[in-house]
Length: 177
Image (tube, rainbow, N blue to C red; front, side, top):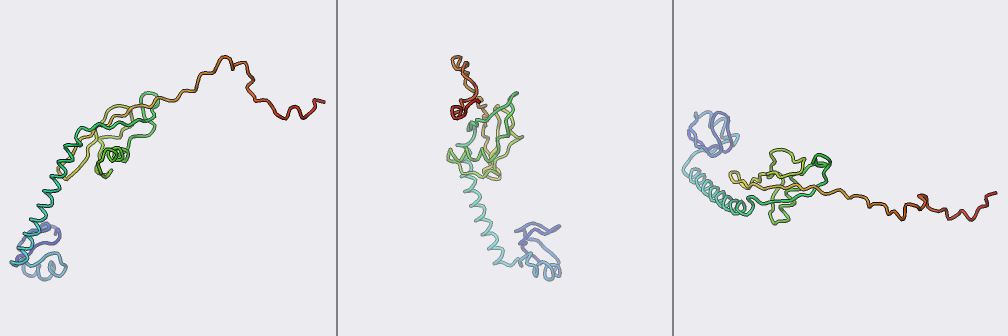
């Protein structure tokens, strides 16, 4: 008996495969559990049609991904973060931040499609990979620049003679007696 598999069956085949099985196995196990369809002429034609439609859909998605890859490849994104001594960041640059920066440039991408070789926890230049299709990926360059810490203003030498404590507005209301 020949059947078309509707689901992956261990030790038999994958979805869409046309396989020969024993009559009893097909009739008593695969068909009642809707794991397979009988491989008659109509079902085989329908399977071929679905395969062609799926291939066309995947080809169109791949062409779209390639056009996005051309625009996205080697794009430089600049992230400004507070940096401590030795160039280490307070926190890290996340894929969510990268996705937000790409969204600002007009790329609508999910953060789960962005992968980093290792977490970005220091200032410098890094590369992130953006998966656009199952076989199309783009490389994005992430530049992490340190934000200079805000230094307090230098004290004015003329104000150095003034008292540190503010004057008490109620000092005149009480007698020293």
